[in-house]
Length: 592
Image 1 (cartoon, rainbow, N blue to C red):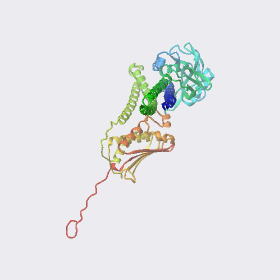
Image 2: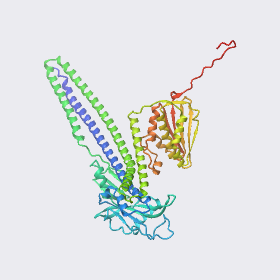
Image 3: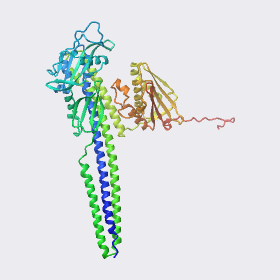
């Protein structure tokens, strides 16, 4: 009797089932490893961004405290303590920080504000928290290393930080730095005058960085080290072989931040692929048992062999479909994971930007309002009016940020509805020019218009278009140099639409940054270094409002030469005047 053909399929089925099960388990394992690597990378980026924000926030407090001396002829110890305790670490008497005021004494005759101060002494008069210090603050200029950094701070007019070295603060020893912020007596023109002294911050690096890690590190598996040159100033966790390095700026010093770059396997990286593999083997075993049964039935009923073969083919087909489905699921999961990574990175950047933009005006409001509420300068000090004006300016700045965020949110949610009506481009431009004239005069910037009167009326939402023009002209004024000029050009294009261009001759934009100008929260780096005004939503809002009118907006720029922003509206937005009908009479008097 001929052997059943299924006997040859049994070892093939076992091998095929094993291979398919192993392949699917491998795909699941690789997918989980990729997800783990992505999560680890996000955690590293979040750590680096958070640490940079922490350093900026803590050192930014010294610039805030310098404002107290810039706005006051003299600062009492009570005022110094009140403003110093606005910083949470100082108020809580953290062991790793102290802030001191060291005035300049024994000033030699005919010594300028920025010259060397070899004959001067800088004794500490105010210290907060009271009783803190390392016992070496009697005269800051006595230490040659500190004196060199003090000279650097005077020459650059910026906060400067000493190289890290061993210090003792509040009974704790370890690597520490001193941050020197020079304070000058401004002359009538507002330029820095004679050096008055230094605001000195002593920071124990272990406490400084651990304070951030205790509240900001979410991945316990991450390890990091921080180097100043070849000197290790801080270490946390056990570093493995793979290291990802980045820069960390601290008061003009460039430090190297090394983060553990290796990926630890997550718990599911083993048991989930094992479960998939076991399931595949189980399915293979079931198929194998089915073949055994079919082989036994073959000797008794020859007609059932065909049915068993059909069932095997059907089972193989279902297995192939399941493999395809699993692959599609894997692709969907990978795509979803990438989208989640991008969303999380965008959230991190947004929070870092907003925390920086909101903290400075809020600190000013809190500090000045506390001074007014406590009557720190007496009952009728005229300085209270200055403090109130500063509070009002900070409040208006916060309100403008919130209004831009609300406008952007409404646009993104599709809640902006255009109220269209006929409008004159020349009229809209005239209204906006009046709006920005005062600011342009402050910088002696001239605004010229060309070709606007020849433009036909258009059907637009006047309020929305006016907001677009305000954003464009405000940016042009901001980026123009003193005494510069801005042109507003209008023209009808060959296709029948109109083009409205705003041209300035200011800072310009780098070629590699042109593709990012319409991204929310992006700002020109050159302008960002000069001022902290704005959060980078103007062009993003303008682009979406122009597109809501079926138009387009484009930017052309060269760094150092200026920028041209052009808004184009399609021909269907133009309102053409209706042709008038002329009646001509023939010689007989009958109208023709």
